[in-house]
Image (tube, rainbow, N blue to C red):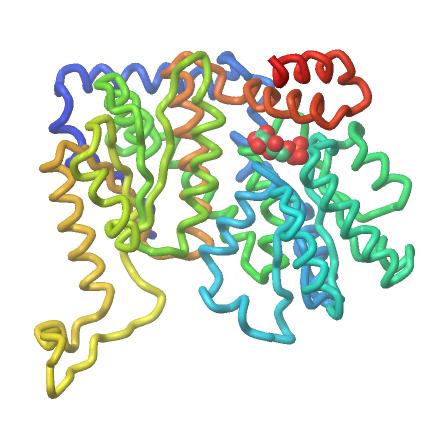
Length: 448
Ligand code: PA5
């Protein structure tokens, strides 16, 4: 069985080799803190053994709930934001056909997302789209009080109740939230919605392998057992104490070593647009985990070759504080060759008969070499193919590397105190009950 691979050969030349050797011990020490639960934020480590702890009954419950929802829905709207949204969105996008959303396939429910923005137009257009369709809701909020999903849920719940009556609406709603706290839990208990619990020891951005990610993925028709199997295989690989055989150690170490050399921006690069939302999920994971105490690598992303025609110039010649991590997919799902053309007006016959992926791979290699020449260190993560198993490996790989990476920075990778700042201002401006003093202060600030 293949596994995802991490290749450092195009990043190591940017470092002093003796310095880098010291990471062997450093990452092992951080891993020990993680495994022994003695590091910062150790009450948020429920995700660490999730792939081996999730039971057959839990998986069956998720699959059964997914099947029930699919049977009664043309559309399933998944409501959530941040960690309660990006994991499911990234895996569903990666596994779906890129034009599936345009198909009217009676056997497959379409998955849409809401609660991830506050755009009035978005909600108006969503309600318009849902007007003549049978739909259901999965509402996900760990805290149960986040404003964006709460507004979306209120809108869509009212619409469901108006259209189907309260009883059928309740049967069309599944909630994923805290066991006992929060407004969503209260409403779930009152209306007797089917629900799943997010454990206290699993933060939002580490929750993709719980029902938060798995239920929407199952609803989209994908195999969640395979995702868990992949994650479990990476869990085992990440327990290998030989540095070079442990992809998690290698990635956590090289990131920190490059950061120490002022490479403060990491660009996650793909050559397959199906992976664009994996990059969004990754940005939240690393950005929210590491960006604190005035430290942290800034996580950015590009999708090549598309963005070579927009961001390529900056990556090649802009400020030299960038390194790049490429997710390279070994094997495409389908085969398509470039056709011959008798007239050869476009002078492309030299490529006739070649798979399009061959050109993509040469673009990838050419770009990597150009970036190395341009002083952009390159880390390569090879995914044998895009399927549930390897995506499961990839998710767990990034989660564990992020935790170790956070410990190398000596911060708590499991909290997000900075996220509250915008909320406090927004509540003050909205004059939310309980924010009276903040309202006065913010008005003074705006008028000064
Ligand atoms: O990672 C996190 O903790 C956050 O991004 C949350 O997932 C996000 O703010 C949504 O929170 P909640 O699930 O409580 O609505």
